[in-house]
Image 1 (cartoon, rainbow, N blue to C red):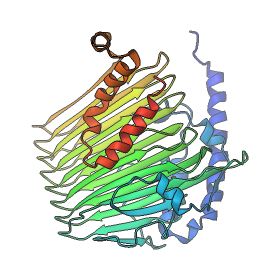
Image 2 (image 1 turned 90 degrees about the vertical axis):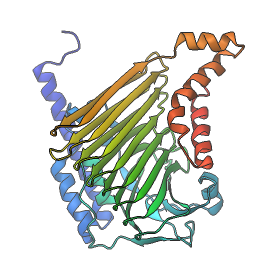
Image 3 (image 1 turned 90 degrees about the horizontal axis):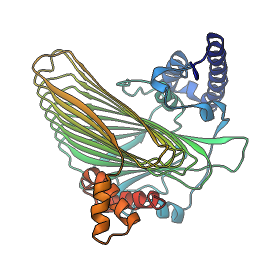
Image 4 (image 1 turned 45 degrees about the vertical axis):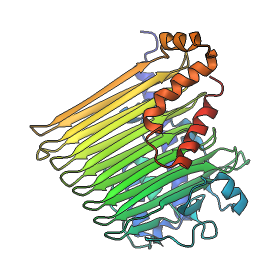
Length: 435
């Protein structure tokens, strides 16, 4: 059949990818040594795991829809750029928050808040070991092993943070065509019992040059704690963004995490969660809006390990032009997780004739007496809705924008911070300007 590879062609492709993987891992090894990872037990442990896992081989199922050619062929280097205060303020959200600023993966005390309120912040000691991954993959291990200055944040028991913890991550690109800047951001947050906090994770580019961002946020939520998390990625159209966040949750807690992925040429965003206590309420959402030839891949992995927990997931995609979006979600219910109620939904709106969506919601249930479900929808703008709006005197482009914004509103309207909501909506409207 046309389009199928012969055995010899398949073997050749497999060999080509294996060679690219070997060369890329060799370059990452040089970065690991430059970072002095051998002096850090944590970095060394993850580098050994990265070598063991390796980069994905030809037609690896989990990477089938996310090409890595640009990553495998790039020559990466660490950057030690500085950012002036006025440039930082121009990129930052105008919110009253406890701010931590990292530039190309390095902590900037000059641009960060002096007063961190109830949060205790420290740099990771070289011999410290952070929690094991909930669900690991190669770029997780690369971030763990290459992150230059991981930050550890602690909120003590019974503390309520009145202001958000704002993690501003600024990456710089270089005009040098021979090398691409690489930045790795690593945070670990611990919320003790009966505490409450909100975290805003924000990724921006200082310029329009290509760069690679690796990010990882791990959160340990204590019993009866309240935690909300918002991620906003608006990096430039040349950026590569690989992220993997973990959330481990105790009993009687309330947790919400929402990601708005509105930038980068190539995005691969994982969120893994483990419900380790009973009576937990967990909400996990995302909004993707790829345009042009961008690829946005979002993945979730959720373990229900105790009974009487509820989880809700809503993942929305608006794919424009010739972009590609991928959603892969997994819910696992352990044998003793009785009375679990887990729901996962992926809704997609295709705006471009060549836009593509690949969706794969999954369930693995090993317990009786549970209520779990998943669903996915893919569609285009409803002609009847468009006709109705235009018959009311609304111009065609404005009518399309109203329908698209209404599609996203279920997620955007849930943002409590007006400043964050304004930033998300401004970026959505900017990306829709050409529709």
